[in-house]
Image 1 (spheres, rainbow, N blue to C red):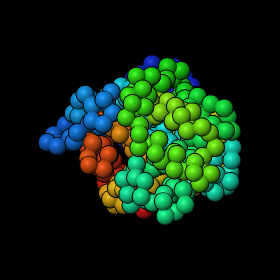
Image 2 (image 1 turned 90 degrees about the horizontal axis):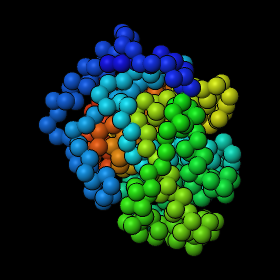
Image 3 (image 1 turned 180 degrees about the vertical axis):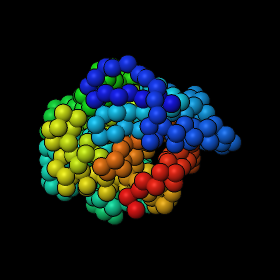
Amino acid sequence: MSHLSAPPASSAPLSTGSHRFGAVISRIAGEIAALTDHGTPADYIPMLAGADPRRFGMAVAEPDGTVYGVGDWRQPFSTQSISKVFALALALSLDGEQLWRGVGREPSGNPFNSLVQLEYENGIPRNPFINAGALVVTDRLQALTGDAAGRVRELLRTESGNPAIDFVPEVAASEAAFGDRNAALAHFMASYGNITLPVPALLAAYFRQCSIEASCADLALAAGFLARGGLLADGSALLTRSQAKQVNAVMLTCGTYDAAGEFAYRVGLPGKSGVGGGIIAIVPGECTLCVWSPGLDRRGNSVAGVSALDRFTTLTGLSVF
């Protein structure tokens, strides 16, 4: 177990030491290594299909920027849908309540790429974390900034203190090559006037955003504003306290696709997963976490990642409940 005792913008060297979370995450890493079923990597995105499902990393960041980690916590991985949290925060900071006119805040109960609900709900997606909802958020952020993916990357770089965070063009291209379902979602919503960009331009921005690579340490630090009531690492406000509460609430109810109820039951924290195998989780006022293991369950969530977060809340007693 290692820790970095510096604000996110610092480049202080790593060192080893004791900490109230240190023994817990070291114990969890040992338990995860003993798992017999680590799931299967996302095989429908060729660039992710070859990942080793037994790899595991976990980082815990405190509000002051101190971050601790075990395993592959410094290994960059494909953030995929985790990037949707940062896109939502940026769009909400710029658009306020207006944003919610085009996307709901309810759990979907269907797979993340489902077309079913859009038809009988007039092109308004259930929440910003299913693919249809994320496309609406990206569309709005692109209209507001001119570079939705670039703004997400900038936020991640600034808050993590890691200027090397970047897109992976091969991953974006891989997703685009198998992006017919997302194209169908976008065209369908455009027919209801809920998409303003040309669909090809929107899809390019969306796939680019999802291709960002970052590590557990990077993401635990970058999500810190959600544990600080909307405050960035430098003390300025990205979100109001009320908006930070809103994002955390939607993460709790919608952040792990159609397994959000099970995740709330087992983990009891706002969380957001990605099919690259990462999951971020928030303990408001206490810490942010990121786990990574590329083996997924049938609902697209990391098997080892969910287990690790379950153990963390069980061992520490930290939960919104």
